Image (tube, rainbow, N blue to C red; front, side):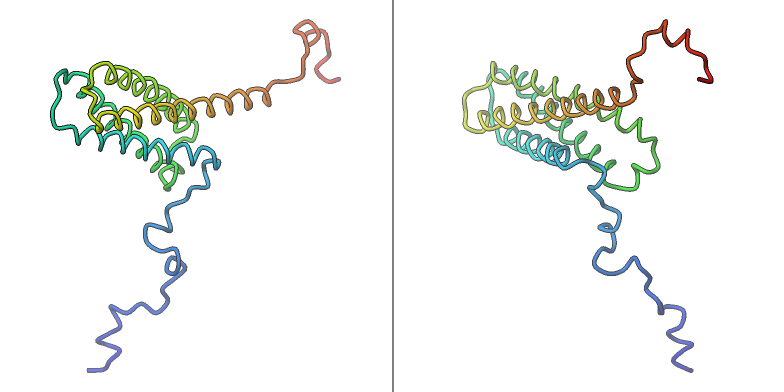
Amino acid sequence: MENGAVYSPTTEEDPGPARGARSGLAAYFSLARLPWYRRVLKGLQLLLSLLAFICEEVVSQCTLCGGLYFFEFVSCSAFLLSLLLLIVYCTPVYDRVDNTKVKSSDFYITLGTGCVFLLASIIFVSTHDRTSAEIAAIAFGFLASFMFLFDFGAMLFEKLQESQLRKPENTTRAEALTEPLNA
Protein backbone atom coordinates (compact mmCIF):
# COMPACT_ATOMS: atom_id res chain seq x y z
CA MET A 1 0.00 0.00 0.00
CA GLU A 2 1.27 3.46 -0.84
CA ASN A 3 1.84 6.10 1.82
CA GLY A 4 -0.49 8.47 -0.03
CA ALA A 5 -3.43 6.08 0.27
CA VAL A 6 -2.92 5.68 3.99
CA TYR A 7 -2.40 9.31 4.98
CA SER A 8 -4.43 11.16 2.35
CA PRO A 9 -7.88 11.19 4.00
CA THR A 10 -6.62 12.37 7.40
CA THR A 11 -3.87 14.78 6.44
CA GLU A 12 -4.63 18.41 5.77
CA GLU A 13 -2.34 20.05 3.24
CA ASP A 14 -3.21 23.72 3.84
CA PRO A 15 -4.19 24.49 7.45
CA GLY A 16 -5.80 27.80 6.41
CA PRO A 17 -5.86 31.21 8.07
CA ALA A 18 -7.71 30.09 11.22
CA ARG A 19 -4.59 28.44 12.58
CA GLY A 20 -1.76 30.35 14.13
CA ALA A 21 -1.45 32.83 16.98
CA ARG A 22 -5.22 33.35 17.30
CA SER A 23 -6.80 29.97 16.79
CA GLY A 24 -9.65 28.13 18.41
CA LEU A 25 -11.88 30.16 20.71
CA ALA A 26 -9.46 33.10 20.78
CA ALA A 27 -10.15 33.74 17.09
CA TYR A 28 -13.82 34.40 17.92
CA PHE A 29 -13.25 36.59 20.98
CA SER A 30 -12.98 40.36 20.52
CA LEU A 31 -13.32 43.26 22.94
CA ALA A 32 -13.42 45.89 20.18
CA ARG A 33 -17.20 46.42 20.30
CA LEU A 34 -17.03 48.22 23.64
CA PRO A 35 -15.11 51.43 24.36
CA TRP A 36 -12.22 51.02 26.82
CA TYR A 37 -14.07 52.52 29.79
CA ARG A 38 -17.07 50.21 29.27
CA ARG A 39 -14.70 47.21 29.05
CA VAL A 40 -13.18 48.24 32.38
CA LEU A 41 -16.63 48.69 33.96
CA LYS A 42 -17.88 45.33 32.61
CA GLY A 43 -14.74 43.60 33.89
CA LEU A 44 -15.11 45.20 37.32
CA GLN A 45 -18.79 44.24 37.45
CA LEU A 46 -17.88 40.65 36.69
CA LEU A 47 -14.99 40.50 39.17
CA LEU A 48 -16.66 42.33 42.06
CA SER A 49 -19.95 40.43 41.82
CA LEU A 50 -18.01 37.15 41.78
CA LEU A 51 -15.95 38.22 44.82
CA ALA A 52 -19.13 39.29 46.64
CA PHE A 53 -20.69 35.90 45.89
CA ILE A 54 -17.58 33.98 47.01
CA CYS A 55 -17.26 35.96 50.25
CA GLU A 56 -20.93 35.44 50.98
CA GLU A 57 -20.58 31.69 50.39
CA VAL A 58 -17.81 31.55 53.03
CA VAL A 59 -20.25 32.67 55.73
CA SER A 60 -20.89 29.58 57.86
CA GLN A 61 -23.69 30.76 60.16
CA CYS A 62 -26.17 33.59 60.45
CA THR A 63 -28.84 34.74 62.87
CA LEU A 64 -31.03 36.70 60.43
CA CYS A 65 -30.49 34.76 57.22
CA GLY A 66 -33.02 36.52 54.96
CA GLY A 67 -30.62 39.30 54.02
CA LEU A 68 -27.82 36.80 53.41
CA TYR A 69 -29.98 34.64 51.14
CA PHE A 70 -31.22 37.63 49.17
CA PHE A 71 -27.66 38.91 48.78
CA GLU A 72 -26.57 35.44 47.67
CA PHE A 73 -29.24 35.31 44.98
CA VAL A 74 -28.56 38.84 43.74
CA SER A 75 -24.76 38.53 43.69
CA CYS A 76 -24.89 35.23 41.79
CA SER A 77 -27.47 36.62 39.35
CA ALA A 78 -25.42 39.77 38.83
CA PHE A 79 -22.33 37.71 38.08
CA LEU A 80 -24.17 35.49 35.59
CA LEU A 81 -25.91 38.40 33.86
CA SER A 82 -22.70 40.41 33.52
CA LEU A 83 -20.93 37.30 32.19
CA LEU A 84 -23.74 36.76 29.67
CA LEU A 85 -23.60 40.37 28.46
CA LEU A 86 -19.82 40.24 28.16
CA ILE A 87 -20.04 37.01 26.15
CA VAL A 88 -22.62 38.55 23.81
CA TYR A 89 -20.47 41.66 23.24
CA CYS A 90 -17.23 39.73 22.73
CA THR A 91 -18.33 36.85 20.48
CA PRO A 92 -19.95 36.55 17.03
CA VAL A 93 -23.33 36.31 18.77
CA TYR A 94 -23.37 40.12 18.70
CA ASP A 95 -23.33 40.06 14.88
CA ARG A 96 -26.24 37.61 14.72
CA VAL A 97 -28.53 39.61 17.02
CA ASP A 98 -29.94 43.06 16.38
CA ASN A 99 -27.42 45.56 17.83
CA THR A 100 -30.12 47.90 19.14
CA LYS A 101 -31.74 45.04 21.06
CA VAL A 102 -28.42 44.05 22.62
CA LYS A 103 -27.71 47.65 23.67
CA SER A 104 -31.26 48.10 24.97
CA SER A 105 -31.07 44.86 26.94
CA ASP A 106 -27.70 45.87 28.34
CA PHE A 107 -29.11 49.27 29.32
CA TYR A 108 -32.06 47.89 31.30
CA ILE A 109 -30.28 44.83 32.72
CA THR A 110 -27.44 47.01 34.00
CA LEU A 111 -29.85 49.49 35.60
CA GLY A 112 -31.96 46.76 37.21
CA THR A 113 -28.96 44.78 38.42
CA GLY A 114 -27.29 47.86 39.89
CA CYS A 115 -30.41 48.94 41.77
CA VAL A 116 -31.26 45.47 43.10
CA PHE A 117 -27.62 44.81 44.04
CA LEU A 118 -27.53 48.10 45.95
CA LEU A 119 -30.78 47.17 47.72
CA ALA A 120 -29.45 43.69 48.58
CA SER A 121 -26.26 45.23 49.97
CA ILE A 122 -28.25 47.64 52.13
CA ILE A 123 -30.46 44.84 53.42
CA PHE A 124 -27.43 42.64 54.10
CA VAL A 125 -25.75 45.49 56.04
CA SER A 126 -28.77 45.69 58.33
CA THR A 127 -28.93 41.92 58.97
CA HIS A 128 -25.31 40.72 59.04
CA ASP A 129 -23.48 39.29 62.09
CA ARG A 130 -20.33 41.42 61.64
CA THR A 131 -18.00 38.60 60.58
CA SER A 132 -15.07 39.44 58.32
CA ALA A 133 -16.50 37.39 55.43
CA GLU A 134 -19.79 39.25 55.64
CA ILE A 135 -18.08 42.64 55.76
CA ALA A 136 -15.96 41.74 52.73
CA ALA A 137 -19.05 40.52 50.85
CA ILE A 138 -20.89 43.73 51.67
CA ALA A 139 -17.93 45.87 50.54
CA PHE A 140 -17.67 43.96 47.25
CA GLY A 141 -21.46 44.17 46.87
CA PHE A 142 -21.51 47.93 47.24
CA LEU A 143 -18.56 48.32 44.87
CA ALA A 144 -20.18 46.02 42.31
CA SER A 145 -23.51 47.86 42.51
CA PHE A 146 -21.71 51.16 41.97
CA MET A 147 -19.93 49.72 38.91
CA PHE A 148 -23.27 48.64 37.48
CA LEU A 149 -24.73 52.08 38.12
CA PHE A 150 -21.64 53.85 36.68
CA ASP A 151 -21.97 51.68 33.57
CA PHE A 152 -25.64 52.63 33.33
CA GLY A 153 -24.64 56.29 33.63
CA ALA A 154 -22.09 55.86 30.84
CA MET A 155 -24.72 54.25 28.60
CA LEU A 156 -27.21 57.00 29.43
CA PHE A 157 -24.60 59.63 28.55
CA GLU A 158 -23.91 57.86 25.24
CA LYS A 159 -27.64 57.76 24.46
CA LEU A 160 -27.99 61.47 25.18
CA GLN A 161 -24.99 62.22 22.95
CA GLU A 162 -26.52 60.17 20.11
CA SER A 163 -29.88 61.93 20.45
CA GLN A 164 -28.16 65.33 20.33
CA LEU A 165 -26.36 64.34 17.12
CA ARG A 166 -29.61 63.22 15.47
CA LYS A 167 -31.53 66.39 16.29
CA PRO A 168 -31.88 68.83 13.39
CA GLU A 169 -30.98 72.49 13.72
CA ASN A 170 -33.13 74.64 15.95
CA THR A 171 -36.00 75.50 13.65
CA THR A 172 -39.40 76.21 14.98
CA ARG A 173 -42.37 74.31 13.70
CA ALA A 174 -43.81 77.44 12.07
CA GLU A 175 -40.58 78.06 10.15
CA ALA A 176 -40.52 74.49 8.93
CA LEU A 177 -44.11 74.72 7.69
CA THR A 178 -43.65 78.03 5.81
CA GLU A 179 -40.46 77.09 3.96
CA PRO A 180 -40.92 75.50 0.54
CA LEU A 181 -39.77 71.87 0.25
CA ASN A 182 -37.56 72.44 -2.78
CA ALA A 183 -35.76 75.56 -1.47
